[in-house]
Image (tube, rainbow, N blue to C red; front, side, top):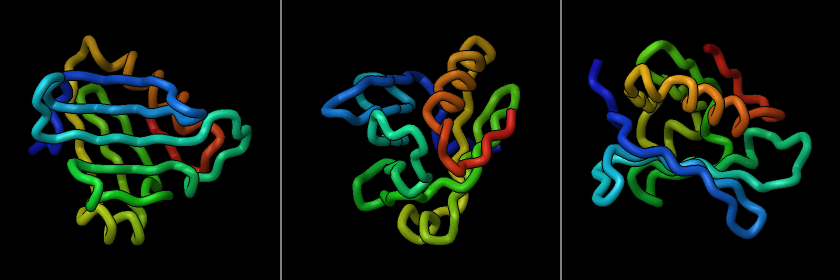
Length: 121
């Protein structure tokens, strides 16, 4: 399996009523990254509220993610048709180590709760 991102760093923070989750292959000079963000305080957010960006703002869209599958060593993020067109791919693969799995599962479940994105662990 060739990863789009070999996970090195995960950041989650809140700025101006927006939660931002950043995942990258390097903390100081990332070559590949994924950023997702959504508004804070919306109890029943739609997937359309979630902004997804892969490696550049030109590869971004709202409501791009349809499904997330987390296995023992990777995350498969499947994009819907409009997300695939905007981000130039149908799938984003993030590989991670055993020591990162619990954090990954927790962050993604929390981030995408109350959206229509399907998460399988």
